[in-house]
Amino acid sequence: MHTLRKDEIVEISLAWLNGAILDEHHDDLIESFLILEGSCRCLIGNEEVCLGAGDYIEIPLHIEHNVIATSEQPVKAVLQWLKVAA
Image (tube, rainbow, N blue to C red):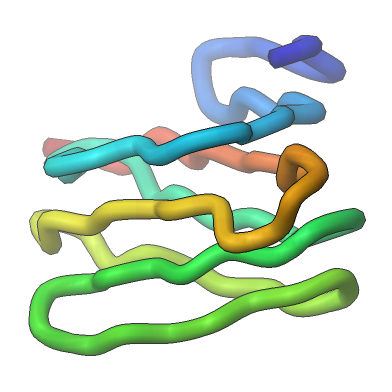
């Protein structure tokens, strides 16, 4: 990841994923990302969403989620974590 902005409220990064991020959840961060290149499958609770270039998603608080790259090239995304009161 390459951090673009980071302060006490928000962190915005340029992220590359080749593989998977499993069993993640946040109690005090609203996570969202915009896919720039590649594709991935997100399992958010019991829902499955497939994303490609130009797609945006916001992950609800307290929900376990997985992100799995499905393209041959790494997924490139703008990732934002927005701090909320726990």
